[in-house]
Length: 335
Image 1 (cartoon, rainbow, N blue to C red):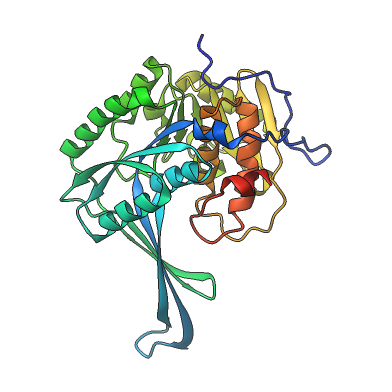
Image 2 (cartoon, one colour):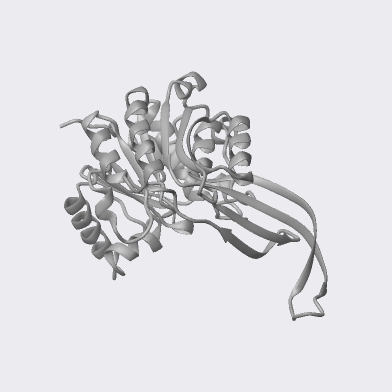
């Protein structure tokens, strides 16, 4: 059977207070090796917009703070942030997505051009490009406002046809699902990638994981996994539930991200726990994007899954010390 994750046997170790398992040994990868990795990110993109200002008074109209906005910052969000993370590490990152013919859509195009990501965009005139607007004062988030709707069926079919064209020229396929409609045809995409011998990594959303059937690796956090398998009562119970899930949906591996507890990898070759890198946590938004982008980049560069998990764990520890959706570059990861 093909081994797209280049798996090697792993020690069966789980987190516990008595004897925490060591993180996988850090592998230093030459820049030129990462530059050969070709990662195609497919999914929902959005514009993360930040308004920064001071709060010095309460509104006379209602008991709410008045923010005097003094600075605005736009960043790539969703699948675009995943692709940006892969590009920041030095990979050849492509992005297949749908955006609207509106100001936020044009801003995403501009930011992608600055990030080194190779965009493959389908434009939908009726689509409101997704915006997550965050209002902050003194580095504290006061409010988030979302603008969004779903792309048209015809545009999604065009995106599926474009996927078929792009598949042969990429090493790893990464599905970034934010439930905004961009991955309506994810089941077909996974099947076609599998037939082409390409590993497929999925960052899931919602409780319908049947649509991800046959994915090579899925990377839920604790909340996302709990929605699908229910609340586990112990680590042994968790193992049993995950193994049942993987068998039912034919996932070769599952990486559970566990915030301050690190991350745990489940595969046919065993169970491996990587303890969290001890850093001050400033903002966890976008950390999952960094994890899966690092995994895809390292697998595309020829590393084993165990080696990739060690580097993804390190990258997560770095990115949570930054504000908002951010990236980790080569020098930060390996020095």
